[in-house]
Image 1 (tube, rainbow, N blue to C red):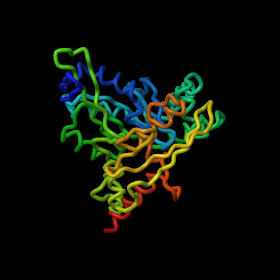
Image 2 (image 1 turned 30 degrees about the horizontal axis):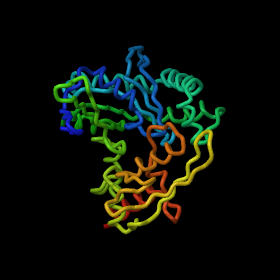
Image 3 (image 1 turned 90 degrees about the horizontal axis):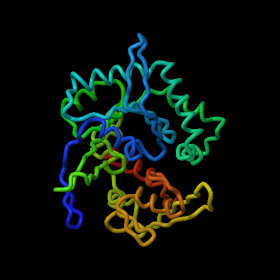
Length: 312
């Protein structure tokens, strides 16, 4: 249950798969990351011409990854519904003609939608290189991205049998008690999947008890990689503005203080900074945005901690 003043929100099922699909479309960055953009449903075909329509495709130009997206409900059968559907979609997504269709759609979106174009601009990708970058990304194996309202053991076991990487994110729906038209949705913090087979398959030296998604700033403090009172720096230049510099202070509980507010995660603090600078972005990766006095990002320190754990 969630409580806001006198209002109580209780967990509720999604009305149907379409409702969950729309929530994903409206909030895709909270799953696939701040350098991603989303392509809507489009029909693709297997080598023998069998058509299939995934719920969408997400392309992360910053991480050089792309996702075959299929929103699902937990009560759907893994064996009779999810597995055969995703298998057909995966086979179709590997076809050259499907990749050409997706590249054309992505280029069209880049040309017509400023929000998508700004993500390429932020990464200093000129227009002349857009199609090539997209082609390089789509030459890699797609990640199967499944937003779902709950994860069963069979779903996890099936995902682990696949050669393709799979990420499962849990999205929850809450409705206000006695006012069911007031709805809120819960997304995972810091893009954290419930299951990430890529993370699980890493070599033993980096596959420690602590996974990348589980590390918080308090872990960096405990490991001596950050000190309470340290100042972290972020530089940000909005598209039509001057570069701004932001300093965040590391607090004892692992939160960051910025602009007179306290933020529980680096990404929330970074988002507050870039929006203060005039950006309308909804998400940002704070782990790569903030740097310490040695010019190391928080992501660098996180990797250092993982390596320290691996050598114990």
